[in-house]
Length: 420
Image (tube, rainbow, N blue to C red; front, side, top):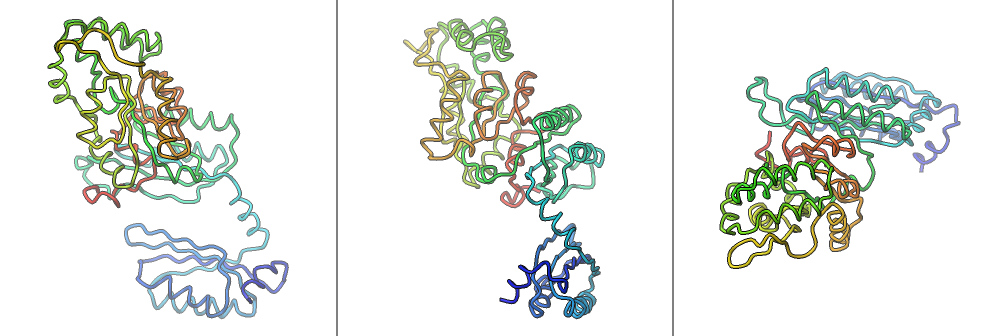
């Protein structure tokens, strides 16, 4: 009852707000010992936070009390800190300063993710300068990856830092931030900028393009090579992926060139498909944390099913080639899975899984992936063509597929024991 009274009487001249900052070697029981002192004197905790870096503790408490007890509280806290071997500092906070801080908490929160093979001081400085120019305040910084090896040649894994920031952002400001961060990808750093809302913390479905996203080849090009029409098919493929010609038209023309090819070559292609970096690790972690996964591909069902069996994808939607007497007819069965169809399938899977579209993620590299990338709650252009990167809010160009995990906020080293 007394705590509630204190909190609701901020105009009472006898009340005092005190900020306590503690730093030093982390000790078991430290938080319990210090908060017990506050509890004994009925102090009201307004805010509390803690960070640990290599066993070094930074700990802060903001509390409200009356002037008659504040001196005794600080004295007991000082003695307790001394006995625990940590340093302690006290700072009075005015009502105006506190109200300003409370008002700042009402601003929109964003998550900024820095991802690269290594993240040096200059990259951090460049990102935080962009945020500073837009008036953002950084609330917290944490590392999502494990320890960084001292020797450069041992740094085989990714490095990721996540910033939690607050501020107001206009449409023009958002465009400026996105443009600045996209430019950094050419300098070896992928930066994700996402609004930190309830949906970001509850993603449940992730949909992937297949060719050149999950695997490092275009299966239709592999089939074309064996049919002796590789050059013609590649030219059509590249034009379609750049968005220069309609995907359905290009697909029909390419499939027609495969007429007469023996289907036995599909097994050989599947067994030798080059998996893109990080695919196995990504799928392992996604399944561990409960994601549903889908392949939505303008390629072929045969190869999607092969990946499904090997890595455990929940859904596969792709194109079915028509076969007669063990040979491809140059035709396909059913509707083409083009960009429009991918977006439709994404929405359909939301209905099947009973989830909000904002809880979805879509990943792709080509122009025909843009509809699903822009429909999903989080769309990621993965090692994508320039047109795709320019039209997607998030882009990964530096890391492998496992880099997607960090854009999702997964602290991989905590869920995958093999990660550093």
